[in-house]
Image (cartoon, rainbow, N blue to C red):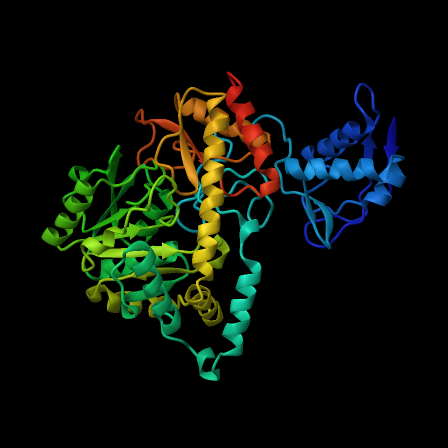
Length: 497
């Protein structure tokens, strides 16, 4: 029995008004609740209900379709858990931003190639993802945004604004607000073993901006070449090339980046030593020593991207490499993995001879972080609230990685690669073709992942490099985590997805 509803009520934004919707809720061999779920799911999948559409209230839809309100509530709840709908207190239920079924011809790669991410390892947002909702989001480098400490942050903002001197709202120091520079120096020294003083800290709008500024400053100092990890985050290479530097590959092995593979013309090396992205290995002590020796011998520099250094689950985190040579290593940190990428706050701990050129680059580009945001983060750090938030997230992400490994053990004999750390794990697969098929199958099911070949991690793809899925396990909200694992297991269990 096909029962039309009244035109759906819609909100602002991407939602449409006056949309007539017909739902086929004939029970058939299933109950009316399951039939309603299937009808709504098909309406979203087919694109008849666009992303952002506000659905009728449960009482209204129940009356229109001729079912009990409890049946509608149960259907909405199930579809929210699956990621088709989004329920927000006070705003009703809306259609999530999920891919529509536009039939064949999407291409084997699914995501349409690599598109740079916003900040640090994490990579591409699938089409339509920016600003939308990706409930079953297993892309790497993304924290659980539902866990953002809203109350604590709001309190820090209030304290920052209340105690703000009028002069603080003038054009500030290009290196950052002194209170935040001091709080960061204290935090990284205490938590990551960095040798830092407030005057060595430069605040940036995330690591990508910091890397672009460093590339510009080092080019002006005469550096012409930079070596980046292979595989590694492709956006780094793009930023450094845009700064006028020539990039070369630095092979990554079982013990991290290989110092023997360093281009002799390189004057700069970019490393993720604590948890290599994406391979998940730790830079071996002998390799750390070798890179430091190279920097001292050649007068070069190392940029240490400590993008998720707080999250080590099998043992205490490895201390920062910067402590071995504060005069040759730039330490980079960010709140993108600990709080949220949208915060756009990071920091660089810079050797004395680079501080001036880097600050000049900041001034030349006008790349300053808003003062109130800086003061609020300084407050969060100084009060210990940031540390407490990190400990809570560390416990939650450790549990998720364990659950991921246990679930995958039931569908594949291949174990997760890399150490137990960070926000992602690597699952090796047979070859690049299977990697692409799995990612495409996931996308069609509303599950979003990345791969070594699919998302531009290799410097020179197509030379027989290993293939793997890069599975982020932090981003799905708690209510969708179990279903995300279900979808992943179903896709992996399919012989030819």
